[in-house]
Length: 109
Image 1 (tube, rainbow, N blue to C red):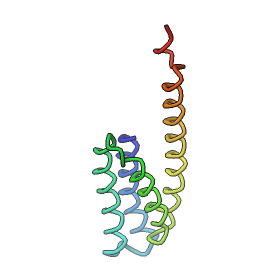
Image 2: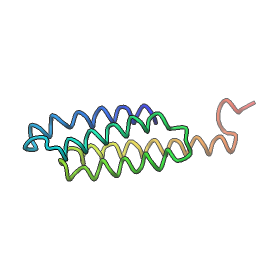
Image 3: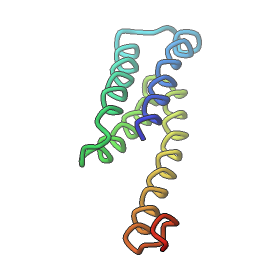
């Protein structure tokens, strides 16, 4: 999950040239939003062991989709990463269920 956040922060920062070229230029609002979102993602990547990490991750996805107001490309990437996070959370739940029922290969004896 931390690695996904770091990759997502890189993608968010790569939106800056797109906004500059296609969005009519980077304003202090659009540039600040994009840079702040990337910085928060990098900080959150280091806190994935905390019990509140998953709600923060989901909130970051909502913030990225809300970035549609800055530029549609940010919102579209937010939707793509929301699908990635949905799959990650599905896998996380599946592994937790397998651990609880003793169905992991390492638990077989």
